[in-house]
Length: 398
Image (tube, rainbow, N blue to C red; front, side, top):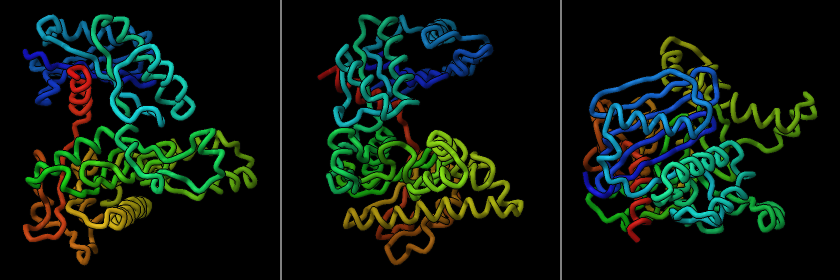
């Protein structure tokens, strides 16, 4: 195997996702997940050319989980001793204002990411745990941090600045950061390739629609605005997150119900979005309930689509001209009904879908708008692991 393979590690609070990816081609000979770390019964799932293998047992911590993943490579392939792995690439959720590009990890970088924990208390500690374990198990391999926020560090001040007291921004770093950066970077670049144009010449609105969801306005491959903010709570309606909301809701619920800030924050992050509207956070289940005549599910679908459509219009205005609207991630890639509903009524902006193309199975980057449409509509499956591997390889070779 070529000397361009990267082991991509994405450590969550109780999970660890891993993938062996060729940073040049995107080929991924194996990937897997270790779930329920720290619980009495966990599960490791490893997929490779040999098929899918699962193992259920306890994994005390992330170190034990990563060791189990390495054993899975040995047992089920491809053995890492047969692969020239050149680096380990880590997904890190929040890079703050310090990190606008992938960064070779050393002790100073680790310390800087630790200081950013207050901005991402659920994510950065787990990311740091993955980094610590990988540095211990692969002491001779370069380790690279690829930040979710980095792609959006190109936003101009007019886009990232909140209208709050100046001290909040200068002393406490309150501003828009944005997330899903690796997905937006990959998808906007692939969209330009599908259109047969240089990425620097293309303006796109990327809609990353999964359990977490965000929109981004990308001008010439550069992010100029995005819907998520200081945290991933702002913006679109998501599986369990509310998205845009009057900030006075916190005080209203505190005064009316005696809720603490923590109570409200938990509800907005865990019990809102589709779950709050329809009782379920899985979009597929919302669609099933809607088809059965459930009014709550029907309203959830309408609210979800309406919020996205507003962002498409806003980002068309922000960009000044638009070449493509691009759907990606689990919901965006797999729901023709959603795509039609989101863009319905935008014909006067030159945006529409071809019904037959939209309904056809999506097996790769696909144009679903009519040939003569002023604005192309695409579905581009995202590949964040490849993007992390690609950026990691660039840093290592540089």
